[in-house]
Length: 116
Image (tube, rainbow, N blue to C red; front, side, top):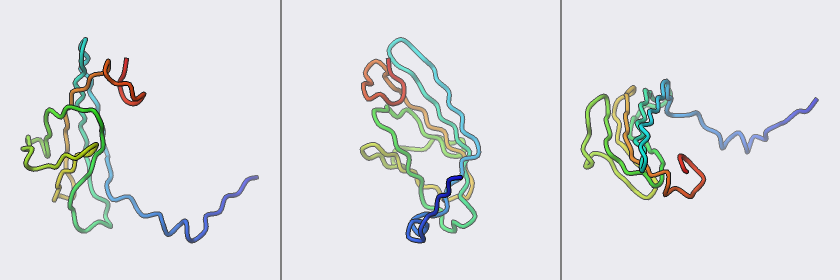
């Protein structure tokens, strides 16, 4: 029998997850030169979270087409895009998020995501 023990120093580094995704749906519309990917999420902050600020999502080489928060299209002024990240302010405890992107699998040489 193998036993593993975590020291108290290791355990101190862990913290409870702040965001729970209860439903995640991905839709792929595949064309010859590109693919449209729509991600739909149902999310809620964990009970220990008392201030709802923002969510930060990562993704590279994506052309962002549309972002919806609670089924309403939100303006690019509302969210922030930085290299590899999309940050969306969210003030509700529970919310739905839909993100539509365009990707080019033939141009993806990273070995991640969709590629040809």
